[in-house]
Length: 89
Length: 404
Image (cartoon, rainbow over all chains, first blue to last red; front, top):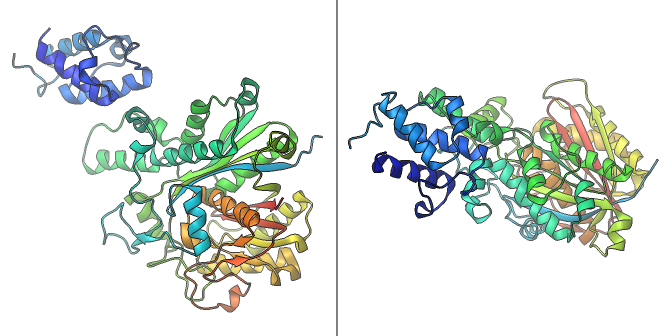
């Protein structure tokens, strides 16, 4: 997975949840970060905006960690569902 | 049937007069007005230019960033007022008490600010999306639910929305639950945050908002001034309040309701009088025991003359002896929070023997010829007081308090 994408996802999680980015790693689970289902909705919203993608409801429900979020975003961006978020690297 | 006397043992307020009960009361006692030029919307877009806003309110002084995500301004006011009231009452929570405590809140337009902002993005800015927490931020019970979660209160929790009578209906229902033993304690009141462009335009078009300030019962009154804020009261059986050594502000002694069954916006003296009579009857009080009425007193032409006639109808010759004042002249008309702000003003008037004035008063109106304590607070040893709320839609709710 591209580092740039991971960092952008971590930045979004940090900003929406008011957590310092350095406290978040790819292996952080949402549970460890104190992120519940309602927080998750907020994060999905911000991630969709950041990458100009649309995350389907079923996929959204399955995401429980930062890594799963990054993988999901990577897949959607690669599939070309968005243009703004297409990665240069 | 259980019929317990009910005490007010805690009060919390955030309003245009300040973020604490102390500042609220100091302003009321001095007749200081919290109405200022509007700051929440650009000047010049409305026919009126003033409001009783909570200027410089900083949510981060009260909530974490995550909590701010969840809570609309109106819910924040409810939570802040409840924290203050609970602290003031010195409640020592037990598991059993948490299960038997009720929360009843009032609000007229709930999280309309969140909705207004989102709808502007959708329709005005042609965005495809809006805040994903719009639903839980907008719901009218958001404040009640958050208070419940924050303090672990698991008894009856609900919200009443009856426009400008919301908080009085909420307080009245909470009072009855405690009196009848359906709850061992209650936190009740109301909160409101109506300052969005959509809401202000809606009020402008009803032509009831004053272009300058709020002058209840004064001949040259030109309408109401919108306000915002929150107020909560802690209610518990007088006996348990005394046995735990709690400070008792006053007794909440009676509650009366009625509906005009008449008109959406025009008040009816008979409907208002009926609610006052029911409140007196519920409290077992005679008109002669009432020394003060915190009036609905919006400052509109129709309300103030109608309310004057209603007070005469309900209290007879006592109407000529008692003091009436509208504290809306200072904290503005906070809609669903109004009754709660005024309940706090009323219990403090009873507890301190001082009737807050009707501020901004200029000239007597023959149609509003009761003693409305113009501009200067009055010292008075009061036995009992009423607090009136009359809503659009003709829904009236009156609380009766007794000094202890």
